[in-house]
Structure formats: structure tokens, C-alpha cells
Image (cartoon, rainbow, N blue to C red; front, side, top):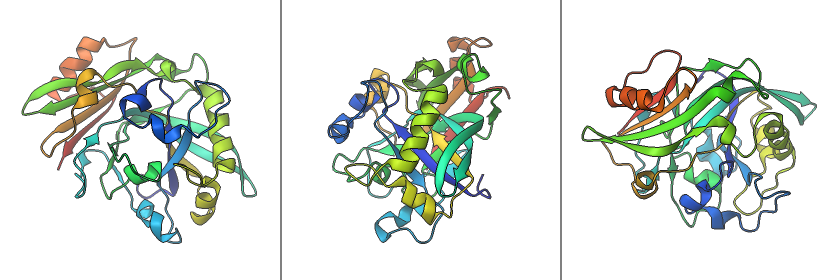
Length: 277
């Protein structure tokens, strides 16, 4: 992916209860939504541009890794955020985004620093190379609508320290996302065109312009809820983070736990195993 010209975006608040567990719900109190379950905002985690304002120049660093989390120098409250990521083609009419076409999905770790006083969401998201994770196994979508293949998948998340495995995220079906399918895509397109630079949000249309209108987007669509362990335990150097997106018609959760213990997954599971360094 490093050779492809894309913008990296994330969706905040697309799984009920996650923002509250992450201590971030207060960041969005002033954000108006049409319905209670609507996500709060989109945020940039990677913008390939050398013309970004100085305060956002860190977003120009490519942050994705298949196997490593680089521990930040200035923070210690680092959490895994298990998600599904969509690899999308962007359609434009002039400078307006008119459509997103997802082609593949994968396991993703929107690893985040819990910074209670951060001005913007993006300030918690990209602290340099290997600050994010995407599985090398990206699965083709047959369609991103009801009864498509992604509807059968679950998101599981584990944490390993000194050989001991714990469940970090609650095993969750992808259809548990608040916004999904075309409803999600339409909302993201609207935010890409119309989200303003206010509160915790960035002006995405301006960043698309600064990135010379990339034709691809990597979009993480929201983190699942944490287990009690995940909510209260932060990453340390030497830990291992595991996110697995698996077809629940083919595998049971207990089988996924066994695979996570061995850190070995078959090719039809999108697995992301990252060592914290």
C-alpha cells in the first residue's frame, strides 16, 4: 500500500459504547447528529501532502504496518482499536466527492494515544511510522450491501504479554456497526465534502485538495467495544496486539482464540499481529 496514493480516514463513534469506554465521548458533546446512533465525525490519519499546515504536517508520515507498533516517545496510555478497514476507490465530479466504491476489507488497528486534552482526533492517531496496523490479508468484497460477504465476518481482538493471552475487544459482528453499507458510504461522502474545521474535527475537503485529490481511500469504520481487560489495560513495549476479522460461518470464537494463542491464522482470515517495540 505504501506505493499507492491514498488518503487515510477513520470514522469516530460508529460502535455503540466505544467512545464512552475510551473516555472520548466528551470530545463530541458539541457535535450535532441527525440520529442518536449516527457516527460523530471522520478524521484523517494519513494525508500524503507536503503542503499541510505545519500543525498537521505529522499526517504526511506513512503510519501503516503489517507487523509492528512503534511505541510513542511522549505517551504511555496506548490502546488497541480493533476495526474493519475498507479499501475504497474515490469518485469525483470536479473537486466534489460523489462516491466511494469499497473493493476490499481487512483487519485494522487504529491504535490510539488517550490524550484527554487533544484539540483534534487526529492528534491521537499518527505519531510516526508503524503507529497504525493493517493486515496484509485483504479480502475482496463481493458487494458492500446487505447479504454481502462482509456481513458474515466478526472482529476479534487479543493482547499478549509474557505469553499470556487476554481478550481485549468484545468479539463483534460487522453488522453491529451503527452505520454500515450504503448508509455509511453516503455519510462519509457527505463528511468528506462538508465537514468543517471545528471542535475535534478537521476540514477534510481541504486536505483532499492538499493531497491532490487521491483516487483511493483507506477508511477504518469504527472500533468495537472493549472487554473489561481492554478498557483498563494499556500497551507496553514487548506486548503483542492481535486483531482478527474472520468468517463466523466457517470458524467459532474458540477456534480463533486457539489461533491467537499460536499466532497462526489461515489465509481466509484477515489477521493482524503486531509486536510493540
